[in-house]
Figure (tube, rainbow, N blue to C red):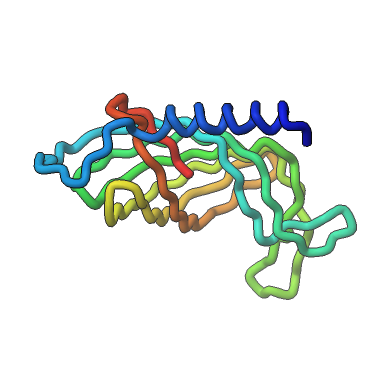
Length: 166
């Protein structure tokens, strides 16, 4: 790596961090924040994990698929919220469908499914959220139900209300 390339990357990283880290630094904040119930709408770029995925030869493989998300959340308490979170999976993939008797199985292809889920959200502090939801995954081939446990962290961009989920 050339020194010019290294310098450009360092400057870019420094500028990026300066934009996302609040400029005001204080050891203590004396002002108490009062909670007000509020609505949030978010757009996200995600990766969906499919644990029953199949490769081209039919072997079991955990798949990580790109997805867009549109999330609506209503935070009704300082630590609790409900939401409707919808993922739009951007690839075709194969999964193994297991029937009730667990002996009959077949590989099913999924084409760009849409996966809405009703989410219960617990926020132990301002930056962490734990979500658990139940929903469906709808594709032209067949519909499935889903259970979605999620944990994420994020931070607000200064006082603008913009939010970055990590």
